[in-house]
Image 1 (cartoon, rainbow, N blue to C red):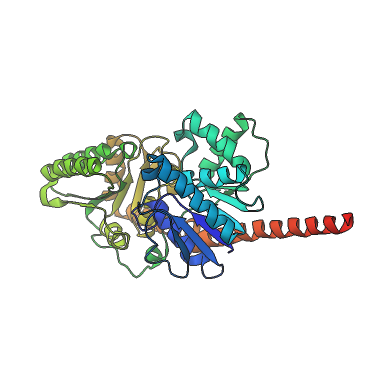
Image 2: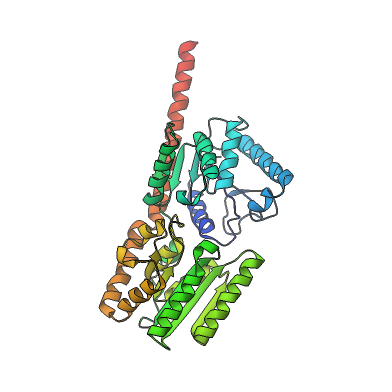
Length: 393
């Protein structure tokens, strides 16, 4: 096996990490023999991939609370790695990376395995205990991939504070919305409407109350003209209850001019972005390593805004489109709503930025280059070791 991917969440569950991983899987299978270790059932739309089902639960965190089952998961992963002997292991989430690094530390898997970890969490979000774990386990990694330069720089600086001396290859590989969003035949409806959208999974730090405040501010500024759409990802019952409460407030505010949906299928999200004119990411400060929803909206010719959430500011690429309060966003949206020329120019900027920096081609070509570099280094090391052995003999 060439490459084994390991993940914490089943790729068929809803989330930006899962969609990004599926894009990589579907492209890499065209030129490599690849495998996938994940919790839950085999992926539905990732054929020609050797998939390993280790547990019935779709999320690895559900096993962490059951130590014996979690240890069984680790042991089964060990057997797969030793049996398939992949040249390179690429983890896309923290727990899976910690498992691979631990197995390597304990010499339960070959030391020759190249280990690549894509870190989708913002360095500043982690507490010191988790940072110490990363410090320990990154000693067994060859490459740390981040999705923004902002996050890469924080990881570099943070590891230096720990006096981290091991040579670690840092790479930036930007997320992509995928080919679904690169089909420019999908038109943008409602060009002159004041239609604002909010999308993402439900979590406290996603700050959904700010979305309600922005909607209320716009309705006060432009009474009767505001439409709002929300697409929220939920996985647990308390989350559903919280989202229903938000939807109730929005219905009282806008009535039929509000549309809220829970767990919208990925394929339907292109229509969501095409229907809106403005998209706002409302996350708390310094909580986002990337902000994939921004790229999906940009590729759909939608004007995007973000809070000072970290990596999302780099994705948007324009300081004027970064806000901190509901009043900030009301003013920014109002400016484009009342200036058609400026709005058209900004929509075009969004599309071009998505094409140039966040395309599928850019994402995949950087992964290919990474794999080629590391596998070539491994081949050279093998050749040198064999040469040294012959000299000794």
